[in-house]
Every structure is written in C-alpha cells, then in structure tokens.
Image 1 (cartoon, helix red, strand yellow):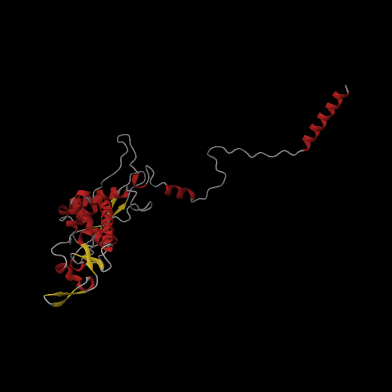
Image 2: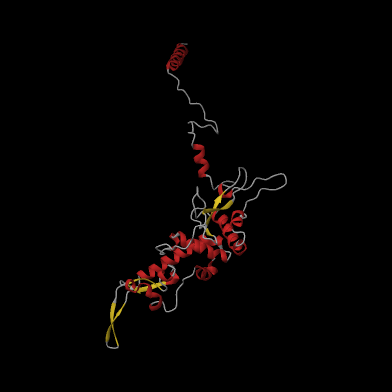
Length: 289
C-alpha cells in the first residue's frame, strides 16, 4: 500500500517538473517551390542569360507552331538588303552569299565558338563587290525563331588597304574575311570554325618543328608576306636566322639569314613552293572539311 502511494507521488512530481521545461519552437516546414529569401529584380535576367543555350532560347529558338504549321528552326534567310544594294552584281555573288549565311546559322549554334551573349562573335564579315563589309545580325520579332539578316557596316567602304601585319592570320580580321570568301566559293562557309582550328593546330605544329630544328633556326616563309604569302604552316619551314659565311669556289660567300633576306625569300628560299592564295589554301584542306 505504501509502495503504491510512493510510486504515484513520484509520477506526479515528474509530470510537474516536465511542465516547467520550455518547449522548443519548431521551424515551419518549407514547401516545394517556396523560396526563403526574396530574389533581387535582376535575378530573373541572370538566370535567363545562363540558360541561353537551352532548347528554344538564343540561336536554338524556333518559330512557334501554328494551327497550319509545326514549329521549325531557320537555317537560311534571304539577303534582301544585299540584293537591293547590288541589283546587277548580285547574280555573280549569290552562291557565295548563300553559303556565308548558311554558315552563319551553323556558327551561331556551335558552342565551341562565339559567346553565350554573342553567338556570332568572331564570324567573318562578307565583302561586297564595292568593298562594303556586311555582317550577320540577329533580328527576329517576338515569338518568332532565331533569324540572321545581313547588315552593312559601312556604306561604300573601299577595301584596298592591307593590314600592316599579316602574321597569325586567324587574329587578323581582314584575312579571315578573305578566307570566308574563299570558303563560300567552295560552298563550305559553315566549316569556317573547323578550318580555323585546323589552321592554328598546323601552325603550332610547324612552329614546334622549327624550334626543335636548331638554335639558329627561325620561321622562313616560302613566299614572303610582302609578296602576298600566307602565314600558314604550308608556307613556312625552318630557315637560318643569322647570316653565315661559306666558302664557295674558293671565295667567301655570305648566306643571308631570315631577317636579311626579307622579301627575297620568295625567290632565294622558296624554290617555287608556298601558298599565296586563300583559295589555294582552302583547296588543300577540302579533304579535311
């Protein structure tokens, strides 16, 4: 009897003690789709920018479907502005222009070139018969697909002044425009990015070969840049840098090095070889494209 009374008293004491302990407040559960912090106004634009390459955005944006036509992506557009600019000459350059425009769409959708915000960055402009440079600009109404349109960058600009330096042609805008024209003539404008990568790779391999050929060796152009030669691997090979003296027929003869020879390399060093035309260069690389 006494044990029961003691047990009940102990239980009452424990319950009273537990009531005095403050309860912890549990946080409200976060439901799916609810954000804890308020997003700044620009967050939506940043997220949209990061997703420019998602299907249906940027260069991948397709024209919306209608009741009569399914959704579709544009891979070519007419050069109406160029037709108006060259009413008589356009027929002679039409194939080149079409190849250039098709190449532009392929370039814009190639993630290895350009940037997210500027898919066409680095794509060469087209030089018109009068020297006017044309570039492809994205222009599409709301709800329509990605579309490129040729735009004149400078009206009636005469294209007859060469750049001071023609070395490393992939960094020279003028030379890349000429390369694009050559590619367009072969219907390969869409292969511009690939050919540019091949050109750089071949160039680096050629320079490595020169470096390993000796301490007094330098890059000697088979056709000098002053004579229209291209700075591509197919147009240079190891050439001595410093002048050397050799005994020929009992007489001392100075053999000119690269700096001293300059433009004379075309005749004294080239021996009829070398590349001086972008069309010839493209023709050599067609089997790789």
